[in-house]
Amino acid sequence: MSTIVTGGAGFIGSCLVKRLNESGMDDIVVVDHLGNNPEKWKNLNGLRFKDYIEKDEFFKRIENNRVNGINNIVHLGACADTTEKNLTYLYYNNFLYSQILAEWAIKNKVCFAYASSAAVYGNGSGPLNGYGLSKYLFDKWLLNNKMENSVIGFRFYNVYGPNEYHKGNMASMIFKGWKEIKETGMLHLFKSYRSEYRDGEQKRDFIYVTDVVDIMVYLLFEDRHKGIFDIGTGRARSFNELASVLFKTMGLPEKVVYKDMPEDIKKSYQYFTQSDVKKLRDSGYKRPFLNIEEGILQYIKHLEEKFCAEGTNL
Image 1 (cartoon, one colour):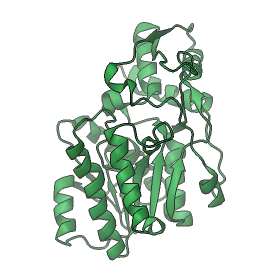
Image 2 (cartoon, one colour):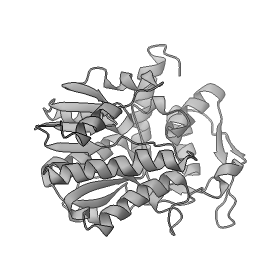
Image 3 (tube, one colour):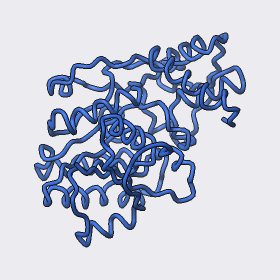
């Protein structure tokens, strides 16, 4: 059973390839765009896959119908920068490419799964930034064309865990927070600009990447249930809670400093996200999710082994 994973050298993609390897699968083609970020390639060290194809070459093959013997396409490749302002760039990378792949997969009877995002919800009334809009447009296109029951959509919430090190400012708050505390002994959080939220009480649904890939494998290979699913824990936790867990797990006194939010994200900032896992649970997925106490404990152990024990720069 041959599977293509676009974005396969990225964060979630490489963790999915690892999980597939653990299930005995190595008939995998990784598609990605390394560009000027060769650090992504390190995510694939030690993993088994039969081929690597650059994104542009892969789409040429799709458009010319030169892709054969494929059972599944897991489309995770996209611009994941929530601060990206170039809407045309987002249109091509996050919307048009997804359309092309979905249409090709459905026409050729290939299982198509793709990454959506909790950013489509904004603060409850729709997307607040270009990234969220690009994801919303593709979800909406599927729904308008009654194609949602022919695909599997993963609407990711705040995913954290191993292999996100190349993401820079788009890395999870857990990774960036661990790094800042390690280097300075303190953690900066954004002030709140809404009266109903105290500083640091903005909330997110944080989900560990091992839970994410378990859900993906379940929907892809164990259940084959179609539709668009929220991929989160169903429980929102505040940044203050996250900070407290980080300091406690690291065995350090808690020192949080609240900083001004950059002007360019004030209007597009989500104050609350929480997944609705009913559809996922109704599909038959019963495994419990790690809470942030459990996930952060696992993650910090991994980070200490990777960066500190080896003497690697953070």
